[in-house]
Image 1 (cartoon, rainbow, N blue to C red):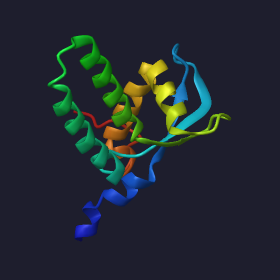
Image 2 (tube, rainbow, N blue to C red):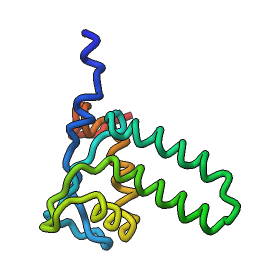
Image 3 (cartoon, rainbow, N blue to C red):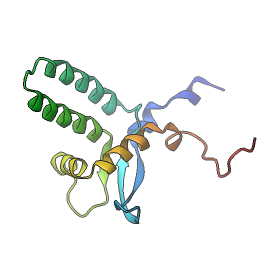
Image 4 (cartoon, one colour):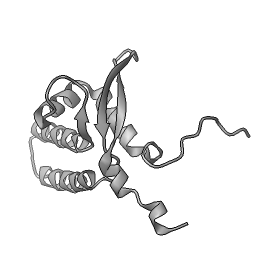
Length: 130
C-alpha cells in the first residue's frame, strides 16, 4: 500500500449523488450532490459553526438563541450539498429553504455525507455470515 490509498479529501470535495425519496419512502428521480465529511468546505463550515455556537452562548433570550442555533445548524448541513436535480435554480437560499422545510432530508444528508464507504470504500453486495 501507499499513503495515497488513505487520502479522502479530493473525493469528498467532488461529492456523490444522493437519491431522494418522498416522505413516505417513495423513490424519485431527484437527487442531491453531496460532499463527504472530509471535504474542505465542510471542515471550514464546521469551524464556522463552532464559532457561531460560542458567540450564541452569550445570547440571553432562549428563543432567539434557539432560532440562531437552528439557522447555524442548517448552514452547516448546507455545506454538504453542492447541487441538485430540481428544475429550480440551485442557490444557497433555495437550498436552505429546502433543508429547513424537509428536515428528514437534512438528516439523510448528514448520514450520507458521514458514510465514507459511499465515497471511498468497496461496496459489498453480500453480508458476511457468522
